[in-house]
Length: 417
Length: 132
Image 1 (tube, rainbow over the protein chains, first blue to last red):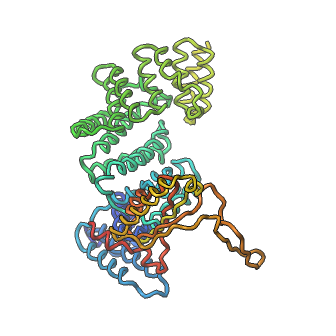
Image 2: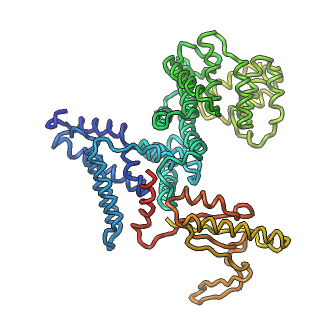
Image 3: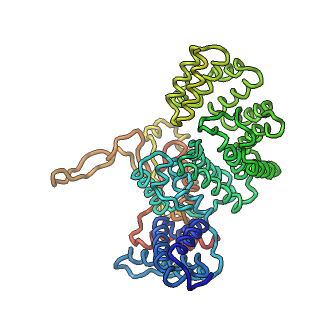
């Protein structure tokens, strides 16, 4: 890159590219020893601001990442020294400064993002803030954007993030990969947080809400990162496959008029083939490792669904078998509902209904929209029109997506007439 | 970093135990304390007299009040503590998980607020570096 030419626009493009590629790496590196994620983020924000002011005059640096790290490191250490006020600089602080300086001189500074992710999803961190925290600390998403995706006020989200970062620092939560004996359990919390972010992004089927659509993409990015930094973990590959399968059908969930299209009626041509193929390959790689888990099973269910791509028909027998296996991992009503829908495809609606009879009146399902939608569908097919209409009413009342509401309303009208 | 484990349990449980059970219970704590010592992480530990023996002080209208009884009246009472020194929360939680108190009550883990703000933030760094 020519060091003499760097317009404001070019500087901001370069800074954006570095932010995208290295934000989490820089935060993780700065915060690894101090566990002060907040201070690392502040220092980095100042460094980015300095870059935008500096580069248009002095030219874009040959290695913008190293430039940013050098500036951020200086700001970071200044802030730490200033915090100490009257105290003389401690030996530890100086040793740390030397350590940071030495690493900056090297071409490649260590990638400690995985350690940062394990800290964000630590069991001692409130489960609801793990995904937002990861999105902010590793990817640099701002609190307002995260708040809008998670449907809470920016102020509330900001407070939760501040409290979580305070907890990491004050309680001494380490930014590192856990010991081998606890790695699998701890990885599960990381994957759960990633999936929670994806699920938030997935709700916006029409893809009109940019913050949400991007959230799904960011979750896939985070999971890719885990599979790259921690290769050989089959559940991470399983989750990546699961999300890729789901994402591959994003466009197919709406027709040309923006109306909701249920999976069974989606046009195979609207599915993203390359994503499906990538998902299949991750699932295969995971299966070779012979350690099964929830995410691989859910990925496999998706795989059986998209079998329609080749055979023209979803493989319902396999879907039911996989749901059976999944139930043995987690006896959740959510799994049972999906299993009932698959059984209905093979043995009829009544058989499907029979399997979930035990959940009728379950307080956990009172406000769970998919329960009411599934039940309404099965009741309608068995001709129990009055009960179906009631279930559709509740399903519509609980749904926040407009096209899905219209879809359910059409179904309901078909039952009554 | 130093961590304080505070142990809460329903202290009436102790009096309901047979002498054998009490001996067994005390033995479990003795073994745990021994293990902490052997690992070189124990700073101090003590069992407390029953909460009924507590005396509480507070200031009301500028006047110091001395009251008989514990600060908080709850189902579980503070019965003892361990102060340990380990690199981070993960290490602290591993030790806390072995504490017999988890079996019959609640163990709260809190990091110590170091008087030197810099050392509070950076101690444990050396042991972390050693791990890498």
